[in-house]
Every structure is written in C-alpha cells, then in structure tokens.
Length: 286
Image (cartoon, rainbow, N blue to C red; front, side, top):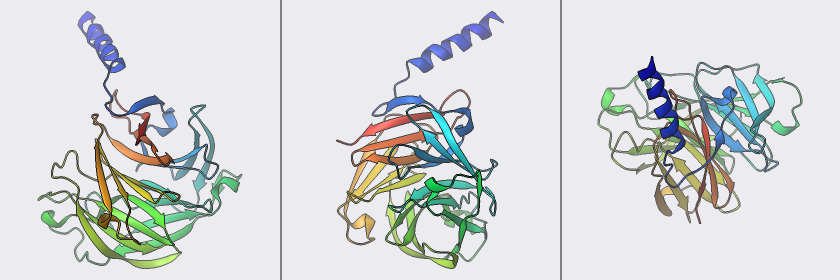
C-alpha cells in the first residue's frame, strides 16, 4: 500500500512540473469536456464552442474559458455522434460539426451538421442542416491497408465550402494529408480531391487531427499531437502553395482541438488519457 501511495504521489508531483514546451497551460477542462475533439471561437469572440469524440452524446457545448464552465448545451435532435471530430465556424455565427471520423476507412455515412446563428439558440435542443458526402476517389470500404487515407479529423469553412484534411491511416505512412472540398450547403455531394501535402514521416507525430481558419488574417492552422502547421499567403484554396511554417510544440499528447483566439494566438486542447491531458493550452505565434 505504501509503495502504491508513493508512486501516486510521485506521479502527481511530476505532472505538476511537466514541461509543456512552447505551450502555456491555461487550465484543466471541465469533466463534461474530457474527450474534447473539436473547438472553435464563438461569434462573440469570448466563448468557445466544443464537442466530444465518439460514444458521447450529440451535444454542442458553449464553454467559457475565463470561468472554466460550460454556459450552454445544445443537443442535435436530428443527428447522432457516431464520430464527431472537428468544429468550424464562419463570420455569420454558424457552427459546423464534422461527423466524419473514419478510423477504419469503412464509413459510408459521413456527415457535417450546420447550426445557423448558434449563439441565438436558447433551447437545449435544435435541428441541424445536414450535408452528406463521400470521397470521389474511394472505391472500397475499407480499401487495402496501404491506401487507408480517408479518415478526417480536421476541416474549415472557407468561401462557401468545407475543406477537409485527412488523417492518414495507411500502413505505408508517409505523412500525406489529402485536401478535399465539399459545398457548404444541405444535400449529398462527392468530396472533390484538390491536393496532397506531406507533413512529416513519423506516424506518431504527423497525423493531422484538427484545423482552424482565421478569416481576418487568412491564416490556416493544422494540428497534430506535437506540432502545428501555419499556412498563409496562399491564393484561393491552394492552401499548400503558400507559406507553410512548422512549429514543434515540445509536448506530445492526444491533441485534437485547435482554434484561433486572435491572429497570433492559438488555443489547443487535448483529450484525457489516463491521468494526463484534458487541458486547455495557449500558443503564441509572434
């Protein structure tokens, strides 16, 4: 018993002294967001919208990072949380929920839910607009292990379209994320393959897990467990043809949420894994 207690106490002490590298630890998230898989700054520029991963309820949370409390919760009554993986917003206050997690590359029911003017929804339940899609280049469900690059955990809304970045699950991992475009409107569509980009080659560190777009500066951020890529100075939606800056965070955890707070400030969250994670961090770009 004494050995167990000493081990637990040592873990607590070491956790308190943990090095977060380039990240500033802001706070531990509430228990209701322990599996946070997506977040975006709300239209009021104060709160954050947040969602949880698969096996959780189909609920959107309005989180106050200053008070560290959930202020409001909205359940999507005409949808389910099969594998919610990321959030996006636009300058009109709409919130987009990506139910497109596809670890085995076998799903045929990929969906994006849209909640118009989400901050004005006062009820705890609401219907969403539904965008269904499939990948134009996927022919098998699942494909061969070497071709499994149809999982998505990152997307943005940009100029009336959704842009999706794949999390590469292929057995021959080389860091390639694929970029797809889907119309941001209700209906059923084929996701159009636009481009590919090699992040880096280590499968533990180079899988894209979240994205965020800052409309005023035109910057796009991609996240992995220990890196951030900042894309800027691109033309149209040729995101990878502009400047790409890779930032090593110096800290690895299950980071699956990222949002611009300001042009040069990013908020990042990780999921709770054992006694680690479940935190909100800040990354300064300047």
